[in-house]
Length: 294
Image (cartoon, rainbow, N blue to C red; front, side, top):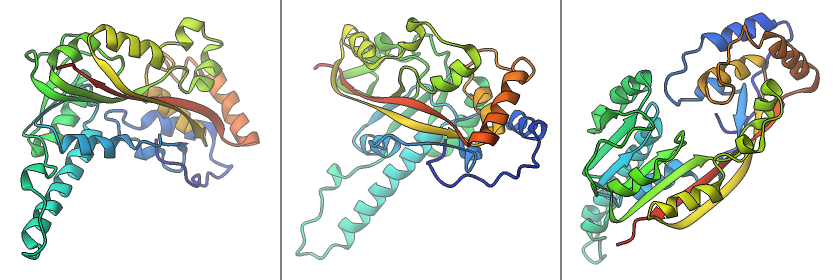
């Protein structure tokens, strides 16, 4: 969702039905959250994943982006890596003879090979249209299926918010010395909203995606976790239309969510937001930096 900022002015004569209908009509393909601007906000992790990914791409030769969504994050990172390479290349060739230029071989550049996987057909189509001009092949692959690539094919595997990391497959397709660099959704993420609709969740559900558990799974697959950071971030929903669109887009939050099934709770939440202000929840994120020995 967009970075925190001023909420969109929502007049009090905007009806519940109008807001719900708006949230229910917005397309949900891809991972572009710009529609939420002014309607919902989520604080961003301090590490700046997309920018950090761009720096990693600039030092890699063969890259795999797992569960790319609509390809938006990879597109941004590739664009930034290409721009930095162009800027350094230009600086090298315009530098005065008395100034030592950066070795071109050491300058960041887009990887020679970049492939992305995605499992949801609408996102496969969207990612293909977005990434093909950058020379990226998008491969349709279900989330839980083995990755359709040879052992040791990539020196960098990236992923932003995979549904679940397939650690054995990640380790298999990495070259010795290769890196997995990813931002994961953590435990209890936006659970204030989840439990508003579903009621209290059991401990097993609340502790799913815990970074300590994922670290253990990564190490069991043969990876060395050299960096792991976690943060809890404030989320605000300023109107019920934003809640509806969020639950339609992030389908695993309230499985089987429909406006019809949850209309009474939606109406209660609408009245609560009108009376008390934004509904506040908290997302959790963790950053993985794991290496394959060798």
